[in-house]
Amino acid sequence: MVMAVGDLDLYGSAFHTDPYGELARLRAQNWYAGTAIGTAVLRYAEVQTLLSMRELRTPGADFLAAQGITDAPLVDVMRGFLLNADGAAHARVRRIVNAAFTIRRVDGFRPIVAAIADDLIDAMTTREECDFVAAFAEPFAQRVLYRFV
Image 1 (tube, rainbow, N blue to C red):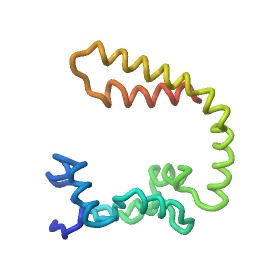
Image 2: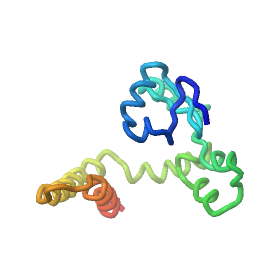
Image 3: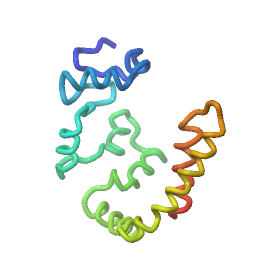
Image 4: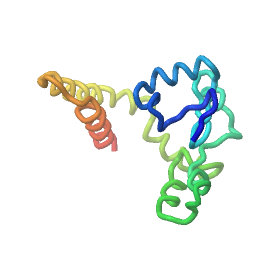
């Protein structure tokens, strides 16, 4: 595939070798770039503007439909995600989820999250080398989720 100026080749060597550098280069040219899977918004201000626009929504199952996947278990899963729900369905799920994320509940959970992070960091400092994602990011997300539920 031939990419035009301002396009982001997610599968190319420039992005694979230095994704942050490639994004910075493109961000200096424009606030968005085309990719093989759709438009990438590259600047914070534009992302915030787009997120505040109620007429826009995440593609969810529409993204799969654009690829010819219209009836499969994955389509059903995508339709069930809060970010993929619209209107009344979104409002219903959001009301349920909001009850779990009150300021009081989140503030009370902060020490637990900090303790989990401290434990994982302590374990990493005993190693000469480690993979951050495997040693911290993945277990952190899992442990926090398990404790929150």
